[in-house]
Length: 155
Ligand SMILES: [Zn+2]
Image 1 (cartoon, protein in one colour):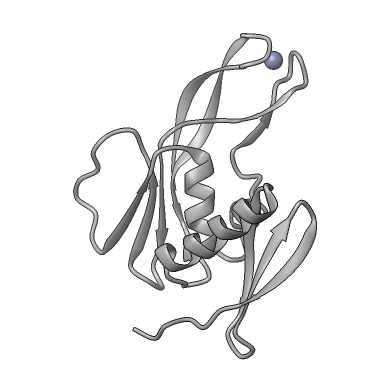
Image 2 (cartoon, rainbow, N blue to C red; image 1 turned 120 degrees about the horizontal axis):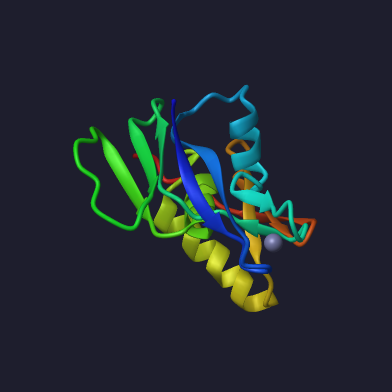
């Protein structure tokens, strides 16, 4: 694990401050970091001055050794990584990719399903679980769970 100091500016009160954040994480299902990635709160930060909550944007490399996969939140180029790499441009995209890839599902296929539901209901939808036995993809839409029939294609 690597940590770095970043300067952030609160979008609400414009106050800027330095925070140390991990820039490299390895999947550990028992860690607090993993739990926070799972529930989508990993990048969330509360400004100590105005108490508003916002997402911190900074570069992060996340490694999933099970799949020899990296999920990267970056604005630039990344070199020297082995295995498959998924590049994302902001924390929202990163968490979206993480929620699908951590379940070892096909990113493109599941994104398509998720987008279709968001369009239909006009609300943000999060992929929360996959039941491989029953072939059900679980989506969270503002706190209510929706089960969608989906069969993971074997590769
Ligand atoms: Zn603030």
